[in-house]
Length: 589
Ligand code: PEP
Ligand code: MG
Image (tube, rainbow, N blue to C red; front, side):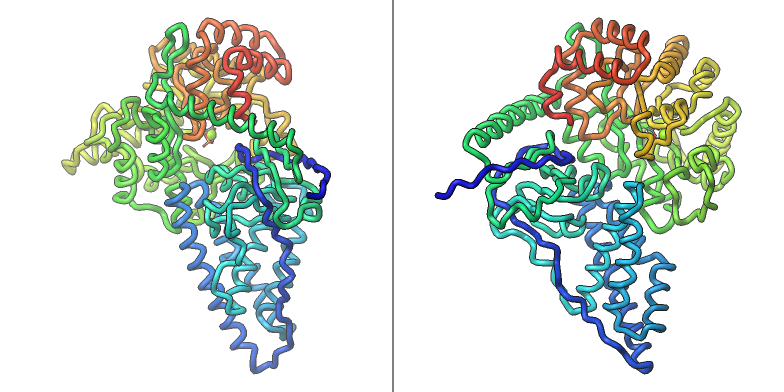
């Protein structure tokens, strides 16, 4: 056989795992879009054709959303929410209708033109999020075009035998339409960690590398490929030595994962006997199955606003009672914390028609919005209370509390709800525990006053870091400044823990920092007793807890507290993991 030289490409590993196999290359589709002039008399018919295609598209997207939701969970299903926004975008659709009327060209042609115009503008934006919207627009447009052109089936890109898919970009709906068993991995030229396709690949546990320049031109159909979704490497025509190296790494990671899975029912206790509470963050009741599968013993954060974001309308009291009871009915010895609505900021519900704000994260969000809309808030509080009747381990948590007065107003509405339920003879758990999120510096600074009024604290580091360091948590330009180990952040965490201890209440961390294995010992050393993490992080976090000594975590925290944060603090945190649980660093990018 002819000797073809090996080629190595570097990209961004966005979904861990190693894949080896033949390539299936998806060249950019040149399928021509029909483009022809129409007469004045044809305009109404063409408009109706377009309108009907949009209706079918909406239906298809809802179907996919449901299928993906039940197979892969709510996070993946939400991707199709952005696609639905495209077909529901009145100004975009109106522009296409306008083009059709004025240019008098067929529906396919005006749709294709308008979507390319939008997509190209978005593609050149600095912001990752906006660039991703270009992919959404193209994905949805392809679907509408297929319907207009009478192609009812999904594109024939499913490989017949398992392969690694190589493409300029793969859209989430193309990915959703593929048979997972026929896919070994994916490698694309475009994309980022936050891209929807990357999120889906992670949910499908499909190794993926994105952002690999010039890949399509250098890979032929059927070429042998190796792909590493942790290191972000794609190798074409691998040498025997390279094959051996990848096989060795794959074996080693597999045995680490197996070992982690075996910890499912083991306690989250350190080598020197310090027990931690390890619970999970969820967004919808559907996420509970993943939590149970990974052996977490409680829910530390139920982000209830997703019930409002997922549905077109607001869930009523009965629907909410069912959703909360659905989560609480499971045997969770470590309890279920229902966080009241945290709408606003980057989570805008179409039903509230919030005015655009110059600084949405500093604006009408979470408890502020709830206190201004007492009917909405009380409906939720009544629903939680009613669900607590048969589930006394259910707890209530208020987000974004910035003052004692805010907590007291919220609590007053809760007491009103209890009195109303009493008067109506509706049962609820009288001693339902109430806690607050500590995610605004003022709350952390006043933790002693708050601790006297609540039964638990949960630190939301995503917001606490954002507000303490004035770093927008969603802006990739300042992402390098988002430093959870910054001394100011650590001081606020420490004060919160100390205030909680004084009053004998628990302090958990439910921000992403808690799910990052590297920061787990630091949080433990600072005195945090509970970690609430996404279901996929449970095994990694538990493994870290079980492999360190609490005394080492305390020593680490003391050392890091004396540092200035940044690289030095991160390096110290990594050092402990490298010493005690080096294999964890093999799995975490
Ligand atoms: C946080 O801010 O850390 C948090 C857990 O809440 P959210 O991410 O929902 O704002
Ligand atoms: Mg928050």
